[in-house]
Image (cartoon, rainbow, N blue to C red; front, top):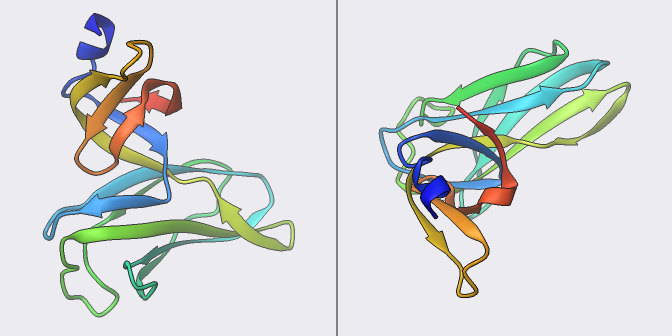
Length: 137
C-alpha cells in the first residue's frame, strides 16, 4: 500500500475501451502503431453506440499520442457521460482494432479484500489494477 501511495497524483496509461468524460474536459492517451499501417482513426461513441467523434491520426510506426478535446464532430461539447473508444487501423491491407492506452490521474489507492491486489483509482478510468498499468508518466 505504501508503494502504491506514491502513485497518487501521477498519470498512468492503461489499456481501455471506455472512459468517463466530464463536459469541458479532454481525454489523452497513446496507441502503439505497428509497421505497415496505412490508416488510423480514433472513434469515440456514446452509450447508445452513436459516433460522437472520429479523429484521423498519423500512421507512422511507433507510439502515437492523441487528445480528444471533448467536442463532437459538429463542434458542440459532448455531455458528461461514459464513452467507448476504439482505434481502427488498416495494417498491411487488413482493417482491425488496435489497443488504446488511456491516461488517468491516480486519486487514491485501495487493496482488495485479501490484501494482495492493489488498485489505482482514477476519475476517467475508474479502478485500475496495478498489474494492468502499462506506463507511469
